[in-house]
Length: 317
Image 1 (spheres, rainbow, N blue to C red):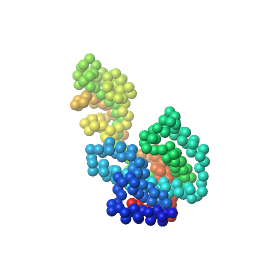
Image 2: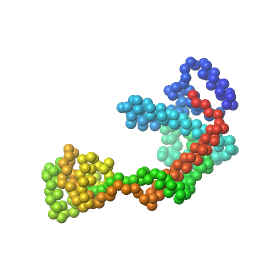
Image 3: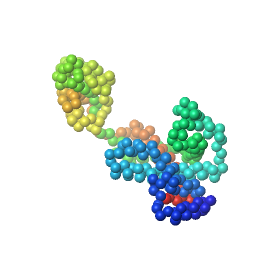
Image 4: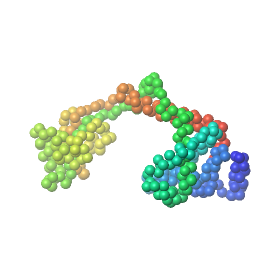
């Protein structure tokens, strides 16, 4: 069968002097054994992603073109892998009951009022109900096959966790941090008093013994006002440069003078200071383990896919 397809492809190539581009939706993107993936299949699969890229990089045409090119390349590889897995399911003689597919469809349809609404939505997208059903079937097969062929939660030994931690200590370094509270004032403060004057009055109350967090709850316009202006632990990158310079010069338990900026006035209090240090393994063990689990799952997946590729006929156009 695949040789007949190749002959047809060659006839098409000789009949046309041009090579199919991504915009040629009727062209062949890749052949995987006896399955043809067209440019239309490819473009349909990345339509939403391209829209997102256009919104983000629309003002940077060169960057946008490269992002779309990279996306097409990556998605082409994904489509090849999906076809290999679907074909492996068929070759192995597995069976997927139609009742199972129907249950998955019913789950998927919960986002719609009823099946008629779903069908109309599909029609607006140029998709038939049978085409939609086939996609659900393929998606289900892919999930089952990937779940069967390699564990989603592989076991990682403590020695591997410790080795990774020791070899990548700088990944777990925390920068200098301060535990910060902040009062944010604007020109729309109470009784139309200027922000700077309001800040000075608040500072007088704090110096007289008023609690900084209570002053923040009453006067601050910042998003953390209800928490007493509590920013928790922050590093220099969390704050603007002008505010970071003041915050990291304060000693624990000390507060700043009112800091006047174009967008408002700030008062800050540093409750604690934590110097740069490497987080201990006891704090990072779960993080390291998850990183290694993800890496191992990817390795097993790639290993399996490469075996499927080694015995398959794949041709890109």
